Image (cartoon, rainbow, N blue to C red):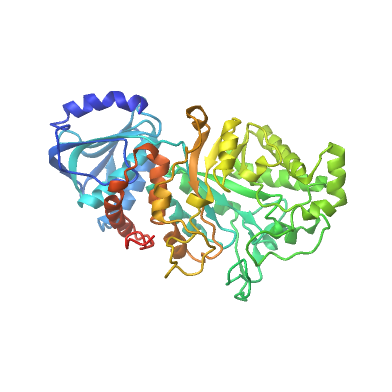
Amino acid sequence: MRKLIYLFAIMATTLMGIGEASARKLHIVPEPAYIDMATEGEFVVTGKTKIVVWDDMWSVADIFAEEMMEYFNLKKPMATGKRGTGIKIRTDRFVPEEGYEMTISEEEGVLIIGGTERGVFYGLQTLKQMIVETDGHLPYCFIADEPNFKYRGVHMDVCRHFFPVEDVKRYIDILAAHKVNRLHWHLTDDQGWRIQIDAYPELTEKGSMRKETLTSHGLNPISWDGTPHGGYYTKEDIREVIDYAAKRYITIIPEIEMPGHAQAALHALPWLGCEEQEVDVWTCWGVTPEVMCAGKETTYTFLENVLLEVIDLFPSELIHIGGDECPKDRWKECEHCQAKMKELGLENEEQLQGYLVARIEKFLNAHGRQMIGWDEILDGGVTPTATIMSWRGTEGGIYAAKRGNDVVMTPLKFCYFDFYQTESREGEGLLIGGHTPFEKVYGWNPYEGLSNDERKHIIGVQCNLWSEYLKNMEMLERQLLPRLAAMSEVQWATERRDESTIREKMEVLRRYYDSRGWNYAPYYFEGRK
């Protein structure tokens, strides 16, 4: 555990008997790096306990105080101040950046030391679980913790179904409790354009609303609901969400799909297409042949103008450009695309997409940002500086890591939470397909097939939640929970997971979910998979 390991022996031998054998246990998700329990003694946290802030971390303290107000049924948040006893929080540069140490003792009360404010925030997430588990009667102990992956992501699709700002904030709260630090926000697709772009107001005026929504399975469409569906985020909305997430140490990575999954944009701006054909905002799921023209300079001007506004809004270093599932039928028939290929000496349409991706990456780099895209961007050739999100399987990620690209592993077999949670599908309603039970997520090894040297290029792990059949927040939460707990163990505690203890831990975490009022699927707790 790098710096933490040097503190364990010192702390464990000085804290009133901690280190002796003890039957007392804590059930924390994700699993901390180190826990040492005292044989006896406890510190009681109540609604009157004070939060003592040593390093001006008032935002961190206020968020904790407000959430505990709900738990203890208080009329106002727990008190905070610079002096006193209770729950003390501070930073120390000798603790890893995202790490924390927690000491609970007679002398200290509760003391959380983070390498940064971020580390303190994660320590408080652990403390909240402990308070719920013990009803505030915290056993004396010492905990030292830090994550395995620096990128711990969750995806949110607001294109297939739109979710208002308050729902997005609730989603962020759930992610923060699981120590997630990236929200991949999927903002544009065939079924809706969800982000205000001043240079092209038609994108939201026309492209944010579809005529109706498919209510049967996408592979065999037979019925629609006949009800218009849409919505979009103003720039003010987006800034509000970004600020809310930042206070919970979550970076939002925006995704602007290109050149495929763009039918909503083509409806708003027909000149983006090869034949400038009139198309509707799509009411089906799957892959449409209608894509942006890669042969016309006006397409590149459009993409750059959009990205300039996205860069101005989002502080994230990574900008997601999609790049997945782009049929080349229109390009094969397009005089502009064929002329561009001849001009550049390209042999096929895959290379034409490779040219588009490389050109966009160069543009992003020139503006101080890095490109991330789905693993299809590998097909046309990609620079070693691009980050690859491997979704079709692990093969793309393994290939990219071997050639030196940074990789976020998110293979659909383990990481697609829009899939069914049980084999029987009983009671789950209509979903996109697939089968990803809790156990499959928990047992996944994101390093499989890689050498120790290649592992360093796997910067993170992400689960994806597409919303084709998820019409409201309750449905979204039931797909996310409790599987996000399994994913958080992969992200934070990759090499310290223990199958023999996870079910007991989850029964305790279930109580925490109940205390927060979050919806979760019952199947894992019923033993169904």
